[in-house]
Length: 407
Image (cartoon, rainbow, N blue to C red; front, side, top):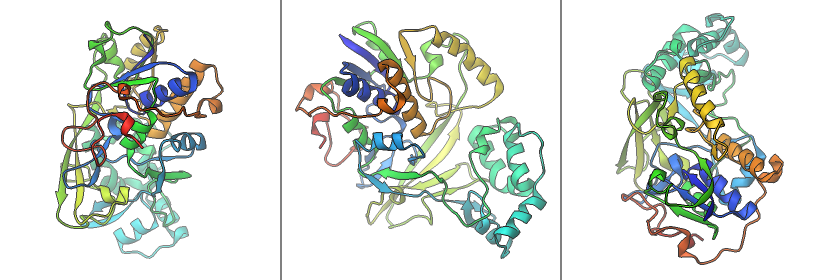
């Protein structure tokens, strides 16, 4: 008998499994359809020995000390400030758009005050920022919108920015200084030994059992449990009663090159004619030294694993119908990006999971994130006889096949 059955071993499920087990002494079975823990943040060493992110780059950043301190119980950090270049007009220029972007793109030598005036002259003022197009042209005008945003957005979402909610492009700021950081959060870092190792430590508890390569529907009638925590697609949980919620997916093309470095920045965006949206080079993110380098190309597509909820009013309305069903299930707690049909950053998912745990345990939000780690025991029973790994590479060298091997 388990106190909780948790569906999904990504951030939402793993944080709640850890908190319920170590914070409340509950017994937990956590299952995942994939052959690994970590959800989309899963990383592993490829055949060349380079640490890569299987599902594209995951850059950790947060302004929440609680979230950062909580995760710090399971990983040391490598300080990292993310930077992105965009390939525009045959040049690589900083994105978000800043002073250097404008000066390089137009051959100017403006200062911060002058570039502010530049933006003011080119912007198309919109009284109401309803769509993603409104947000961008209101800030930087039509030409920069066409160069940097429209093509990228159409590839990413298969919709024109004029058809998308303002929240999509509102995430990207415009700057009048030379700050080239993609994020400005107080805490910006990467797990020193990778995300997978962090998740393995999080789930290393005698009260947690992990079942991989398993659809929860295969076991839900066979396992005795008290309550369920569900982090999968909410429409799938209810057998698509009102139809499928729309998502965008991605195809990842991983390559390893026999050169030390492949490109000039961790990520290069391609907003225009190419079929892919960006290329990521992982060694920038991890700090790994290696004579070769690995990159990943991202190709947006309609079919495949659900990654991005599409923010349109009719989709929000459809989700609202599923939320009504979810709210009526007192025995199931819906947590995470897919279960709540909302795009969250990693830190936001951790914060949401800690908040849910606080409600389950009757604790205040700050109390919910305090970790009292039990003594570790040697217990191969912590994980069912399924290896952690994707069959193509190891989560860490050497291969880890049970959680008790984590140091």
